[in-house]
Length: 107
Length: 116
Image (cartoon, rainbow over all chains, first blue to last red):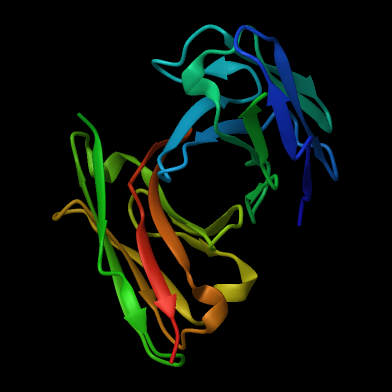
């Protein structure tokens, strides 16, 4: 199974700040990396697919990058609604696996 | 508008069975692979099972193989998860999700609690 290591697990940040969340795969996943946001009520929103492609309706302040085993999600200027949990997920091979999550918190 | 609405959760005793349903609307259901993803209390997301658009292929995580069965009824635009021999560690919120560009639509989730 491909293990996904996400960091940091917790990220205190301020409104307007630029933040980056990292995700490392235990083996190369050829850009098959997706990002999701989960709100405290459990609602899950897809953000990015195939490393850097924004899902429909996702604001342009979100961006993704990476290759090989190392990937990242960047939010260029934090808005109030961005404080949530973020998960990376690989779909290079079954079983599809998620990172453990990053909690983006208001500093 | 795409909608995925799960149902069928609740409290069940260890060793018993439960069947979850996910009613889909707002898109051509039989064009998409579908999946179940779960989240144990205070834990992260975990893929459970995937079924191809026509039901011909299914995939499971190891911990549920032989106990869970994913299926679909394309005429009813409904996805199912039959869960047998339930264990306490199956306690989680179960989400159905559509595989478009990654999992691009998710339901609101349904809670399953396995406890005596």
